[in-house]
Amino acid sequence: MYKNIGIDLDGVIYPWHDVVYERECLDKNVSNLEFWTKIHSLYSDFAINNLVQIQHYYGVKNITCENLELLNELSKEHALFYITNRNEGVRFATTSWMKRNNIPQRENLIFSSNKIVPVILNKIDLFVEDNIKNAIQLKPYCRVVIVKSMYNSIIDHDFETIQSFAQLKYCL
Image (cartoon, rainbow, N blue to C red):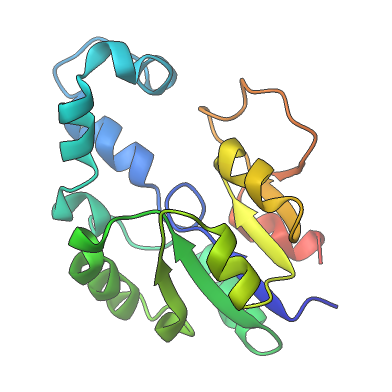
C-alpha cells in the first residue's frame, strides 16, 4: 500500500497547457498538438520563459470534480505532496488556486526545479507525472504513473499510463 504520493500540478490536476493554448492561440490557425510540439519554433526562449511566469494562467480553471474527489479520498489514507516545477514567481497564484479549490493537504506544496530531491526527502512511493523527462529521472526512486496528454503521447516510453488523474484509483 502506498503511503506517500507525489503529484505534479500542470498536466496532472491543473490543465495549464490547455489554458496557455486557449489564451495564446485564439487568433492562430494551429492545433493544440501542433502548438505544443512546435512551441520552440513558434516562440523564442524568452517568450516561452515569459509564458511560465504569467500568474493568470495558473488559476483560470478549477479542478475537476473527479480529480478533487480522488484527492480527498487519497488524503484519508496517504500523505499527498504536490511537487511542481513551477517557479517561485507563481507561488501566490498557485496557493490561491489550491485554497479556492479546497485541495487537501495543500500545505505539502513544493516548488522545485529538480523533483528528485523532494521525492527522496519525502519518501515518495508513487509519483503522478505528465512529463516523460521528469518520469525518467524519478523512475529509480519511486513508481511513476504518467497522465496521458497530447504532448506526451507522441513520445515512446514504458511507464504505466492513465488517461486522467481520476483513473489513478484503478492503479492503487
